[in-house]
Image 1 (cartoon, one colour):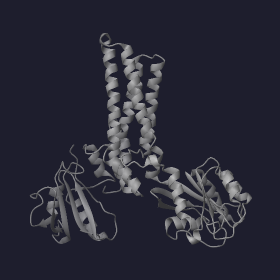
Image 2 (cartoon, rainbow, N blue to C red):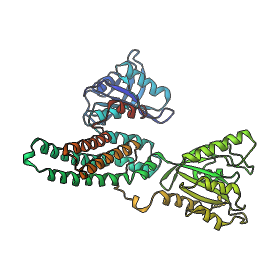
Image 3 (cartoon, rainbow, N blue to C red):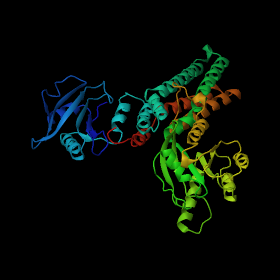
Image 4 (spheres, rainbow, N blue to C red):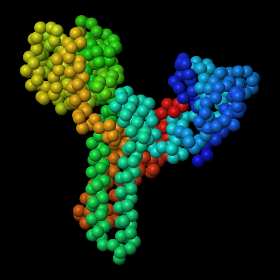
Length: 458
C-alpha cells in the first residue's frame, strides 16, 4: 500500500532533554536527507543505524538544530514503511522548527494515531493490537500495563483467530452438505455444528469471564467516597493519593464540589471521587455539592462509606446504608483515635456481609487493611495468572457478547430441527462479529474513529 509521507512530533510538548520528530513513508529518508548534513548522506547509510549531524533550513541554509537521526528501512519497521526519527533538543522552539522544515520539504502533518493506523493498514498489527498500543500509553498500574502488553503481543488476536477458524471450518462443512448432499448425511453435519458451536461458546465464555477485571484495569474503577460531613472523606482521599489534594478542616461542609483523582491501590486503578458530605443544608453552594454527590453515587462501581468511630450512628448514616443497597461497598469506620461511641455490631449488621475496616487516618492506621480489602473485592486469586488473556476493551466485550448470542441462536436452531442452511447464517454472523475485533470485517468509519483517539505522533 503506497501512502504519502507523514511527520509529527512523537514526544510530549514542553521543555525536556530530547524531543523526537518522526517521519514515515516512501520519501521519509529522502526528505530528511535534504535537510541533514553529517559524515554520510542518509540515503547511503545502512538501515537501523543512528547518525550525528545538523539540520539546515532548506531556504536560508542556516543551522536549525544539532541532531541524532535514526534511519529505518521498511518493511522491518513499525509502519512497514521507511521511517526516520530526528532526535533534537526538547525545547518548544527547537522541535517545532525541525518539524516545520520537514513539512516544507514535502511531508504532511500526521493525523492523531496515523502511524499506528498505517501499521494496521500495512498488516503489521491487527486492530486489537492497535488498540493495545493506546491502552499501553494510558495504563495507570503495572497490571493494566501487562494486560495491554499481552494484547499488543497478540494474545487476544490469536484466540479470536482460532475461534474464527473453527467457525469457518464449520461453515465450509455446511456448504459442502448443501452443494453435495449425496456425499454427506445431514445428521452428521448437525452433529459437527453442535460440537463446534459448543466449543466456541465455552471459549467465548472463558474470555468474557475476564471482562469485568480487564475493563477495570483499562478504565479504572469509579470509586466514590461518601459519608456525613467531617467524618474524614477528604483525609481518606489525601491518604490514598499520598498528596494534599483536598482541603481538610474541622468545619463541616468544607468540600463543596466533587474532586477526582486516579490512584493505584495494590494494582487496582481507582478513579477516586471525593464528594461533599451528604446532609440537609440551607447553604445553596453546599446543597449543589450534595446533589452532585448523589449523582456520582449512581455512577459508582465501588462505594467507600465513611463513618465516625467517635459518634453514634445517626439517621443520616442509616440513610446512606439504604442508598447503597445492592452496590459494591466497603464500610470504613474512621477516627479510631477518638473514644468509641459507634455501635460496631450495628454497623456490621447494616453492612450486610460487606467488608468493614476500622481506620485512624490521622495516625495512618488501617490504610493497609483498606487497600487489601479493595484488592480482594475485585481481584481474587484466580485472576493472578501471568499468561491469562484479559478482555479489557468495551468494544471487544460487546462484540464477544454479540458473537455468543449468534452461536447460541445457531445451537437453538439445531435443537428445533432447523435446516442447516438457516443455521449457517448465525454461524457466519458470529464469524463476522469476531472478525470486527481484529479488524478483518470492520468498517472504514470505525477504523477512523478508533485511531482518532490516539495522541498526535503515535
